[in-house]
Amino acid sequence: MPTVEEISTSDIGAEGHAPPSKSYLLPYNDVEIQRLLVQQKNMSEIYEGRIVIAPVNLKEGSEVLDVATGSGVWALDLAERYPNADTTKITCIDIGASMFPKEYPSNMTFQVASALAMPAGWTNKFALVHQRLILSGIKYDEWEQDIREIYRVTEPGGWAQLCEWNNGTYDHEAAGTNYKPGPAETKVMDLAMRVGEKNGMDLLCAKRIAGLMAVAGFVEVRKEERAVPLGAWNGDLSRSLAENLATVFRGYKDAVLKAGGFGVIQRGEDYDALVDEVEREWASGPGGYDSFVVFVGKKLQ
Image (tube, rainbow, N blue to C red; front, side, top):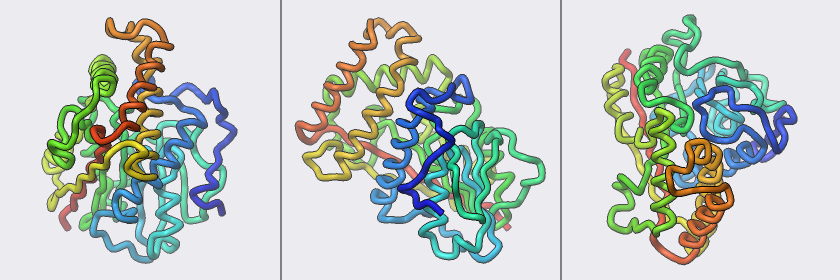
């Protein structure tokens, strides 16, 4: 079986396929698959090598669900490194199959399913339900249904673990006063926010998730936020995070242009130059941060 580093898919290619949902803002190609792979490595390092933050006890026969799995990189890493993972059953779902890996361990399955309407037979099924970084693919008013579905399929006594990006320009508890974005970063973040609003997204979803989990019925809801400076001046992790976030920003280009540039961007070249300037700001020294929040909650017995 391939390691996480050897993930390949069904010849998705550089051009890729159309996203399975019109609301999905990022590309659906090999660039995105590679970005997700690097992102998994970064997230593991940010959270001290922990794949699972929730205090769940996975034992023989336990079932795990990875929602919006993409290329399956989190689930593959779980299968490779987590204690007892080889005795569990890991189910991975997404609304399209073109990013699914060609090969994976025999205790894993990949299938097309919506996070908003998972199979009825999955009620009270999974010891751990994982979902990460779907803010670019879900509408503001779909979050409540998403978390209700996660609660439904979690087994009594089981745990949910959700992770989202914290939009630091607007709310950044972990970085605090150390976060001082430059003018180019501020401009591109504002464009991202406007793209999100125009497409009905909530790029500030990290502010709402804990409350939505509690409303759905989860107890012992808590969060762990991490903020890491951006730029090679702070080491390899910060360099990699900067490259990864710049790739996300570049992935928003088509959506920005489709919206007419919001009076700020006239051509694709202008947007590319703006992101180039963001990367120069990050490389020049302290100021930019990347931040993520992991939320965990338990379903009562």
